[in-house]
Amino acid sequence: MKISIIMTSYNYAQYLDEAINSIINQTYKDWELIIIDDASSDNSIDIIKKYLSDNRIKLIINDKNLGLAKSLRKGIEYATGEWIAFLESDDKFFPTSIEEKVKAIETGAELVFTGVEMFQDQNRIALFQKYFDDVNKLFINLDHSMFIENFANIIPKINIIPTFSCVMTKKELLLKCNFKPLCKASLDYYLWAQLADHKIYFLDKKLTFWRIHSDSYINKDSQNWFIRYFFNVSLYYHTIKKKNPIIKALLLLNYMRARLIYLKINKNIIKINIGNNKFIYEIKLT
Image (cartoon, rainbow, N blue to C red; front, side, top):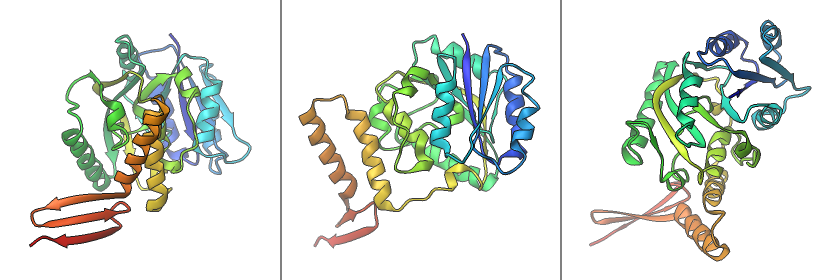
């Protein structure tokens, strides 16, 4: 079974050798690597061209910068494998990453994600580790390989999938997805919400080296709370879109209300939160 690995490249020349070699060194050999260079201004293309003697590696060069979403979509459409794995050009695979994912899909999974080993910026890693520790404790206990049965209920609240680079899923599912999120840096989160009603499987092994650094894509697109609010609403909409239209409308309105205005009662104080904690009113009870 051929696995298509999609890698977008934009001015990450210093990381490309590590990323590409981590794919070449995979124990699983039936793969193709599709690299979409998004009009890099550094020497990324020269580095990639060194590897094109391996006929499993293909390079697509965008004439102009299209952004992550359009570049990924182009790579997915070009892929010839039935399954798509992702590797961001600043990350690396463990040698058995693809082999282990292929074994996992034999369980009937339609999307597999794995554990990650974070490296480089230790201060940022500490923050990310706390985030995922809290997610694990408060939302789901990811301490063994398992199907995430309540994924559709979790994903509107929090993204439990660390990075594109730890995911493998079916090409046909991705082609049905909308690739136009309100928050561009949260494209992965937006896609996973659209796939929430499929069989999501967590493989409890660290199979991706996830590079944490200040120049990563996720740090380049900040949005105000208003845009973020409607982005969260769009996430929730995708998890209920197959429900009866009347029920769907009621659920969506209630979710919008809950995300916009909600109460917190703490001892003798009632807090009314509006706009994701941007405006807080306190009422003291006597």
